[in-house]
Image (cartoon, each protein chain N blue to C red):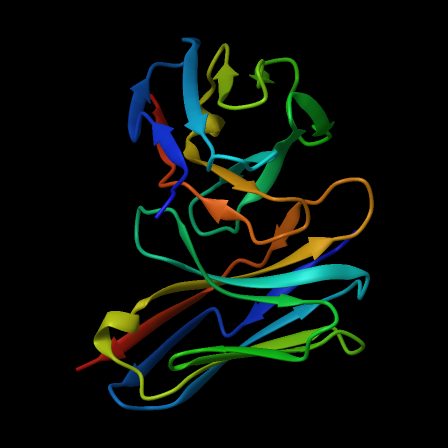
Length: 113
Length: 112
């Protein structure tokens, strides 16, 4: 059974700092990995999608990497801003009959002005 | 930009009552998912549809939950009877096969 772990569970940083969020998964048989942002009481906003054949994806100040063999992904946020404060969720697309995403519990990020 | 629509956004119901949620996926997306997210946890899949067919409902509590997507477009998730432990955010998502999943705003259910 696929399990996804995100470390740390919570992170508080001053504005302007670069930071890294970590995600690990137990089964390397995935077809993609998505990073999402969730604001309190809201739905999920997709940030980056990495296909299993890719190593990284970039969008603006965000960069996500994938090392499928070691079961790890990182989300790098450059020059953090207070508006980046949210919960960040990592999810892996599982191979097999179902195409469901298996999620971690998230990292709650607070960027202080 | 196309979005996944869900209604209602919030629902408060009493224990043992029936409740229903509606989802309209992005046009052209054949795959539709219902996830449940308990506070402080990541979402977990309840049911996945490919067009009008159920692909995975292994985690759906079938004694009280039902889901349908009759014409392969919009979908309804029903709970009857609701229990206190059903309080959660219910999220709908859609995608092209094995592509990026797009989520709606969710329905926050509170069972009293």
